[in-house]
Image (cartoon, rainbow, N blue to C red; front, side, top):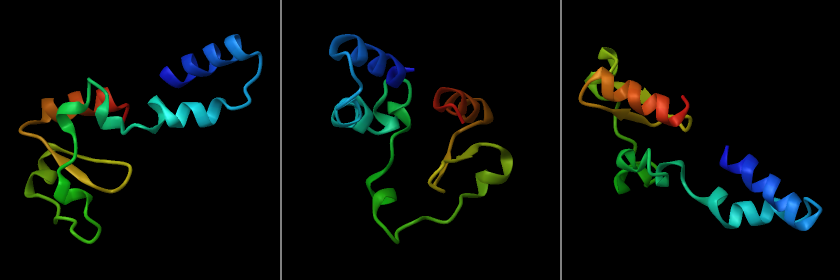
Length: 92
């Protein structure tokens, strides 16, 4: 939604889409999904960002308390309700 709004405003103000993509990724489009207020609490751990340091899937994965992210990482939550809230906020 934010991207669509950005491009609409860009076109309105500049009468062209030229440069819009670069401007989008230089600003809000270049930020992590987890920087948004709704998802900030679920941000990544620094260890999770180190290549080759992937942790094994936690045992909670079988209980429905975890969510597999598009990049393959698994986020574990204290309960299924928290996992579902995250999935809804992330659009997964």
